[in-house]
Image 1 (cartoon, helix red, strand yellow):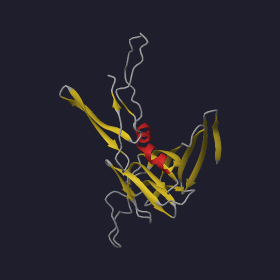
Image 2 (cartoon, helix red, strand yellow):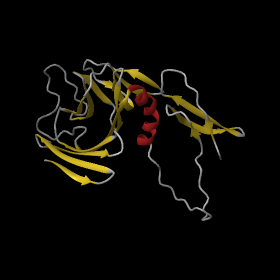
Image 3 (cartoon, helix red, strand yellow):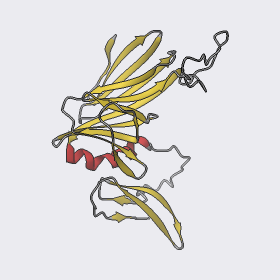
Length: 237
């Protein structure tokens, strides 16, 4: 079944329930009425053995490049169906438009036939790599398998013009991947506005580290673009 479970002025939420050989996926799509962002929350109850479960995202445009973030860099990823890995986000683009996917708890995937496939989990057995026709698992007992049971996944999809999308992904990734932490905090009650520790005026530049250095601080920045950029960092503390 597919049904609308929330219809409001800001948010629309649609829920779909899918089943395959005893395994179930509850997929919720959240669409913001004021932008192009769509969030997918997946609750997967997996009981499959020796199966890889993927989230398939066919593209509505012909992609010319498929890329993903790595540690302090960007990789061009294979587009012929080979499994690849990436961190935080991947995107597909041509010279006009691009689609980015911010992912939580998902690192593998492949791209083929103009579709992006993100690897969710596998039902492989522990320490049971195939060796020709040799029997690996004893058939007379229970053998635990990885990635079975309930698993939760969250993805954010966003589309726009290529230049705009590439420039915005690093900042948007921090918003989605590093949510605000709840802290025990008691304001003074005098009504003063609490200012941020620092601000950066370029969306493609993010702060990856901050630590005390002598009488001051050392800030490490990351530029998510392939070309050099100029930014201004301001601290009001």
